[in-house]
Length: 301
Image (cartoon, rainbow, N blue to C red):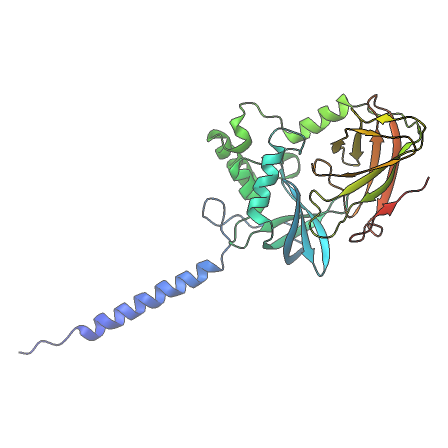
């Protein structure tokens, strides 16, 4: 008796298996993946979802994203990275820059804060959640005061046990504690005593990337040379930029802020000039409308 050929079913099985594998790969390409390769938990409370290019990284947890021709400041929600003046602050900023600078990302907006910054989770082009990735790499804390997502706590614990990022320090200071201590070390309510040395101009939104191009001009209206050692600029968020050098009598000094410890907020801000003794010598405010691209804001008191 002649045997029946099994080649046709075998071929059909191969084709079926191939189609299943291809179909599975296609589905995976559209899935968002977590820091450990699995799917991250869904982001709660999303009120808007939009995409844009990351044009500036201000610090570890604050970026600027281009949306419809405008630069939108986005604060990564549920996490807190070290301040720029704090240990690992620069490392956190670099980690964020390495992950998202120049990339087109998806912003899952959950609200806005008192500074009119967008609060959001940011999804990278490969599907990873930037907020979660920074915690997993050890460059952000789970902001447990404002988050109930225990999975972020698990990522933090994993980074800590493996001494990644800031956890290389056996006893790192949480940024929220650092900010409180920094405010207490400064005069809680510095006296405001103008003395002829003042902020005369700001350039918060230069052409191109803001980083290392923002400028402040300080004028000396007195007849004496003013030594700026120990002086500083402080914004509304208590970020500081330390000054150096001197200003001649009846002259001005334009400073390019190459150290971005106090980014000038394009949505408006307040900046104080404080001398070495802790006295406020000048205070200026500007709005988002004034901070146009390439516009130097002048202050005439």
